[in-house]
Length: 167
Image 1 (cartoon, rainbow, N blue to C red):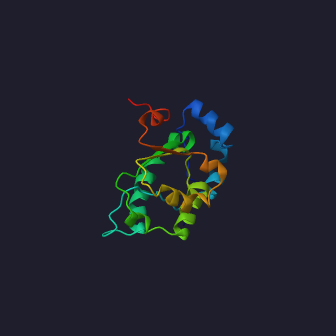
Image 2: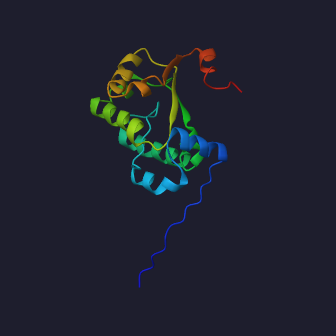
Image 3: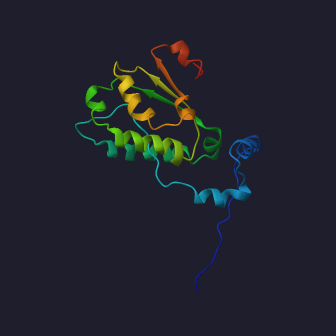
């Protein structure tokens, strides 16, 4: 005889975060199961550094998926959001050549439609001289809301500190 145990959920959000979830995300523990039906099973993150002689873009994304999966285990991170800091210091033309329009479209769609957490800002530091090309691949598929969250810092650390506390 099959057991029909119902999964019971205990909300771990702090009261103030629960208010944010209800107000900004229109979610609460009572509607959680409905929201889970819309959850996407795939998460990817673009890493700024990769060894193109040993790893494909897909392999790098698989590793990054594990990192992000750990981050979003915390409900606080899902509701409050996060700031993504990408350091392009060692990003060379060989890295850029691994990208194409299909890749850009997939990553853009993932950030906008499939990632179960809120990216508050994407801060780009130490950008290479061809950063306009890199962003061109991604931003052509992005909504204005997400494009406005991308900030090119370069090496202006004072500008970076307007987004991230220097301590």
